[in-house]
Image (cartoon, rainbow, N blue to C red):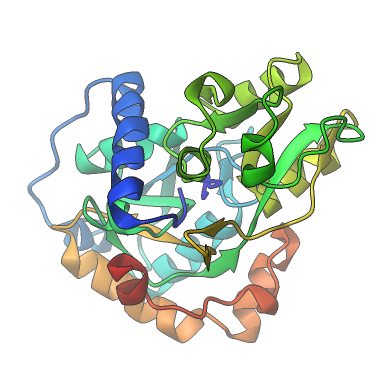
Length: 297
């Protein structure tokens, strides 16, 4: 997630696409009907002063909406900075929703940008247009205090028949579980991060699959929860890393191109790292792949 957390990259392409389709299918059903996309060019609209409508999944530290209605986190703060360059008269208007609803609602025209730290994967690139990645991160699990099941990675879970892992619908962690052979009855899906953590605390699962930053943030805020050490899943002999970015409708090329141009000047600057440091992002997390490379693999 982002989201992750949120979906992030995973496994052989055919398996990855199949797994994503299953999770995304559930997410679409949960999300319900979507509104038709607007005919007016989105960049023109926001440059005329209308708000840029972003979707978030309330996944800290990537993006969430505070009680006062203001969106914050790594992605909304970067989006706010970019918007000040490409459409100074506009502002951010955020909507929080289940992670699995983000792409359907973007495609349906209810939001203009997914600003949720969503991982860039080939399956998602077939549905939406991504910006250049803004960070790279690994995986971890939220577990009950002390990690009584000794959870370390997805492969270890697949080999322990008594261990169950909770997953958020629409995220890449679903694919990690699928590819490593964890059966569906030991990998229940939840609509939101909060629901998954509630299930963990109730003993329905022994772990919840998340990005390392999400797991660390949950553990820091909840004395009943620990975060395992960060790891990078190894699938088909290859280490998989998660690269997050912003997602746009494919027809909104003018908006994506303007956004990317401003991002190029901002990412990696001192101002960039000062902006996202409060959310746990550091220069060591700078992306080392392009969106073109990530969509192709």
